Length: 497
Image 1 (tube, rainbow, N blue to C red):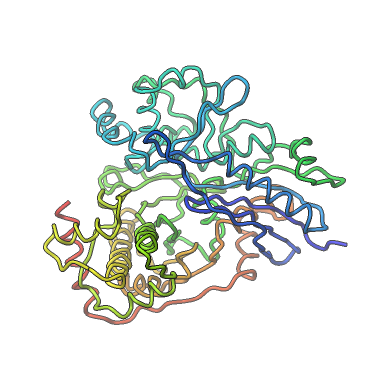
Image 2: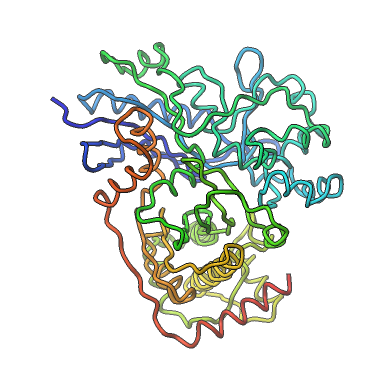
């Protein structure tokens, strides 16, 4: 007889996805990977698209594996993913086409066009969102220019996790944390910023109801349960967690308090704090901070930093050139090279989606009068040191916005396993870094399911349980006079942009 309550978290990342089994025994959470699969975008006619049909097949495969391997009832399932991207449904509930990838070039120059029409301060005062060229607002504006018919005929607009929740439950809604990333969500009214869409002549009849994280959307569709072999006395519930993966990750950070900043470290690095209210000041606009919805009526005041995409793309380039380095080998090579030789701004447009990341880094260094890193180790060290310095800049900016000091940096996600980057971050920021949990997103997803289904009272209780469920590692900053010198060089680079 089962002594635990079982949940499935579908965690979709930009490069891979997982179906994770979470067990709650009343004291601690257990986590097991049931199914991992690649998330390979499609290139079709010059367009970069998400293969959501393949992802859907993999999600169903995860459910099938649960049905065949786990002889215990499943309480619920929930999906989280990256933000920003969306699908449009027709009258029959079918996709009008595969969703665009946020790195597709259809938004090139669009943000500047939108800002020329309505102004930066107008958008920020309502949405409080960081200006990124691929935000949903600019994707929709681009589509209104080149594919308006599809927008006019669309019945439903669903972001990526909402799309899969619809296929699981039949319920078409927008979950709050992901809705806030679109840049057409009102930070003060807590609803769609329809006036902004009207000003930009973007159709909006397709916008769904917004629901808070932790909402039970319904039961797993019976025909789907039969298809995957999930036959149990009680139906499986479908829950909307913090569907933006960062919202789920932040929810699962033990000991997070007002003196802590977090870094959700993966393909992107999300550097921020958990706040009670949005910060919509002129200084926040100038510094380009974002106010995204969090769980339990919180705001994630943060900045997007390019993240380990830099290293991932270097690794991919090396592999295609016949140099099949593992992650550990690349980190080892980087530690064997001379420190602080070359630095880059991780958020420079050069690195958003280059054909070759190593060549883009080399061209940047050449253009800025620095030594050109020519070995894999030198390239990776350049990326890691530059990321740590960018974190320091963002932490300093956060302190200026908050009016008080940050004492601890809490790193979660895959990047928390990168010991070199964690130590560099501690040294560059001169603050203790606490790393873990690695699987923060899946744990946050599962924790929200446990709260929604009555297993836990609230997020505070969930975080307390996670303190006993995970292992954390601390990195103490070392005294090194080279880091302050590197920071001065780095800040001069940023000033050149």
